[in-house]
Image (cartoon, rainbow, N blue to C red; front, top):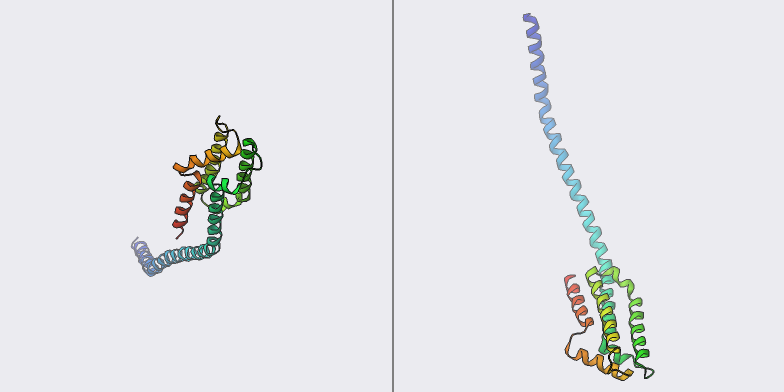
Length: 182
């Protein structure tokens, strides 16, 4: 029985010696694994940043151009500027109303694709400015004291002498959003 204890004791010492030799290798392996894992994640993040930075160089001019076009659209549909640019071709207030609304809608359709370059809040304000401007034109047309195209023009202009137009409010937001790009 004593030989059995000595053999198992020698085997236990030999196993402890193997573990003592393997322990530093296991620790180094674990440290190396976490180091390379962190290094790989860092490199992937760096590559993603460089790709995004390069894409930003190409997208920024497109976004600025979109903001410019939206600003131009908002300026063109501003009621006071629209009325100066679009003259009535007859004395009918309904014909003039239709002409103004068609002009606003055509301008809108021409700039519809710009929404992919701006924030949804900005685009919603552009749509709201368009809708509000059309609503104001329709509302003034229904007034009893407006019986011809010239009076329609006068009433719309007078309405915006005191108030800020929907277009000007939207332009202010566009400007603030452009400032955030820089």
